[in-house]
Length: 243
Length: 310
Image (tube, rainbow over all chains, first blue to last red; front, side, top):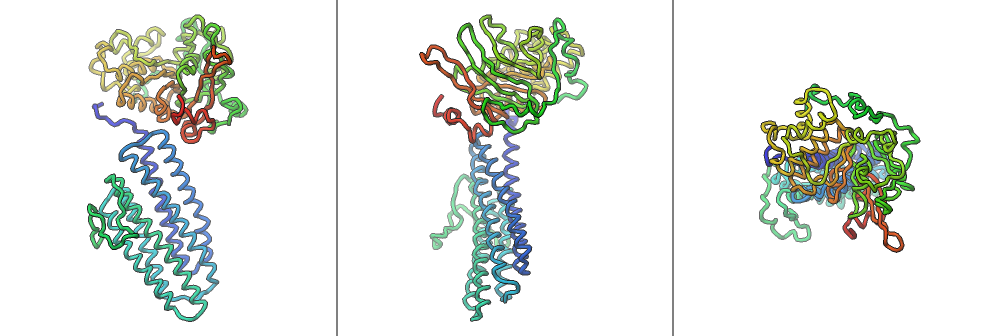
């Protein structure tokens, strides 16, 4: 054994397993969103109710990881990078749980629209595009975190601009959707759906920010919503446009 | 890890190796459902994981030195192939309790053990039990590494020779050193004096020495208190490997060590009688380690593990 041989292997394995569990939670939420989009597209109430029921699995994952982190903190007293990772995982798994809840929120809206509500194809297209963009961001956030990839993490801000733009467009379309009461009601629901998707997009950016925190030890928001006029903090490279 | 051939045959009738063929032996017995339901602490909750067989069952165990009680009324089960940690402030009787598990208290003339200490359902303190056989099956590692002033090889071979164990001694020595994760460091200097090793290596040698006689249980009394953090980490890694094969009970002053390595933790406190003349140890809480360190059920445990009192 060399003097620098690795010790505390069991602890390292435990920490790695927790991270894998949490990141697999992001995949669970992503899967939930895929089904949610399908339910929206086809006004599939049955599928929506399955999404709602399956959210228990995501909640269960949240509790599992949360308990695992408490136990790890209490027993192994992680420090330095390990401590940052554990703190970041607590945020990450909370986002997973919230993303699952947003899918549930969307799915609960669908039955309110009735069996065959009037729909505006342009608006529906934007909603679905938003959803697909968020799914892509969830994947990128997961990869950025697991590979500790700062560039990919920072690029989430640029990617999320797409979601924000679509969100504003959905809002505008809702205003201009016309006088038909049922159509307006559907439009209002879609504004709420867009809002939920926009929140999920923000959460992926936050996972990116926590990736940076794990890597650098500094926590800075990539984008400050309360001071949008300020430049993005120095030190974080802008993502490549094709990332 | 050693390959199958070099491994000491743990099943080879330990009774034969005993000094006078004592009846003491390891028995594998399934725990009956009712036995499993016995609370680990009087009036306490029954922890999960009843499937694991108990190596030791303690019922109302008290130890006195002369007329002074050291620990009183301890009831708990210690489970097979787990690491059980005993923690608590100085003078709470952790070491005394540990020493009752392999009859080390016999060596103190004034010591008296009351209550029931069952090892795999045999009464550990029955008259016909051979203490030498007990200590072969239930080995002990002490606070300060205490190698014999002999070569590394002879340190390991000593126990098997005294006990007349059969088999190739070279293989027994190699197997024990491998299992203690020490072989690669010492294989080229087996004939050198053990005192030339570092403290951490000496402690692993002592662990290897206890393994060499193929025990069932290893008791550790503050095994890392004289070691630096890296050596401590190695011993802890070693413990986690060894628990696949052995049951380990460890006394430690280092609460964080109990938290890191053990599966279950028992917390003892010091009790005083009314005129504060006598003090003795008492078991307060015994549970899965995760529970003890995230959500202890007793306020006294909470105060101790959070460092409010000590």
